[in-house]
Length: 220
Picture 1 (tube, helix red, strand yellow):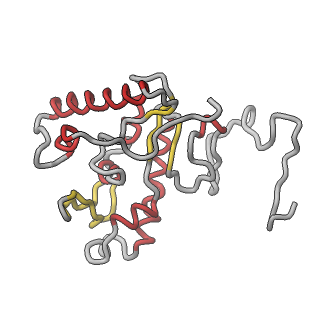
Picture 2 (cartoon, rainbow, N blue to C red):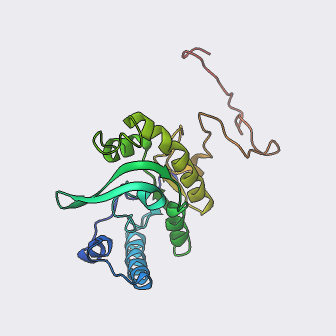
């Protein structure tokens, strides 16, 4: 579609979903947890389809928080309750031990809907603001900026896995000039270079008769 419709942000969570994500209330049986969570995701996908949306998501139901996915795929974080909410803080150098967490979200959606699907990834800046503490994080990363730099390759790997799993739209991709609904507007090119291009099919240029203009300092 020319103007694809979709939801920005997480979908509202029922008490059922909130209990599933609460470490003190979630089922200890992993199979039971998956069954319950899959049912919740199936419901929210169907709700978006019934509303006529072109781009759907799993509502980010599988994440305790939007930014918490980085702690799902990496070791090095402390989970604690603050003001009634669960919160992650980086306390050790991150190890990307469980890669592909966001890709699993995409693959589940892809198997259950024919609509365009969206998986959101938080930016290094947002994670740096929320997950780095001067008191608890300095031994792992001396500055907030150091933590943000360390996040970039991890998020890039997660993004590539999401793309390969069949997602139709992305948000929050570090180092990308285009981030949303990439297949709708063409593939992105990283500002730090890309790999895997095929010179037989990939090129910089236009596919119509309009000229291509390059500028430096806003001058041609």
